[in-house]
Length: 111
Length: 120
Image (tube, rainbow over the protein chains, first blue to last red):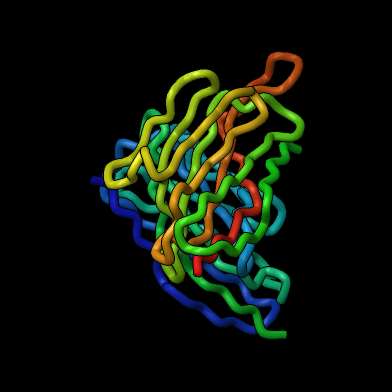
């Protein structure tokens, strides 16, 4: 069974810092990996989707990498802002419809 | 961009009643819709997958007679929690995947804003 782990569970950084969130998964046979943002009491916002054949994706200040063979993905946030404060979830998808979510990293950016 | 809506956003009901949650794709045809549940401080868990016009596929441990899913059209799926009990209180999120006009399709799941269910 696929297990997805996110480290750290919580992170607090001063505004302007660059930071890295980590996601690891036990089964490398994935179809794609997606990073999401969840604000308190709200649904998910998709940030970046990386196909299994890709190594990274970039959107604005966000960069996500994927190393399928080692079962790792990172989400890099450059020049963090207070508005980036949220819970960040990674999810891996196996062929078919099954998604496996991590438990998330709660990020607080201090002004 | 693709938008998925859910209604209601929040519902409080008495134990034993049934609650229906709607999930709509507003600007694309959702050939596949997913229903997730999230308990406090836990991650999202997939409950079921539904393809338009066919029966939903439920994940292990999810009672199909309790969580009725209907995906009658390419833009609407409903989740009905029958005879709800306090342990069903949770955050329910739907997502959709499908195709856009012009023939393009997307592998990305677009998520709704979620429905907070509280059963008293």
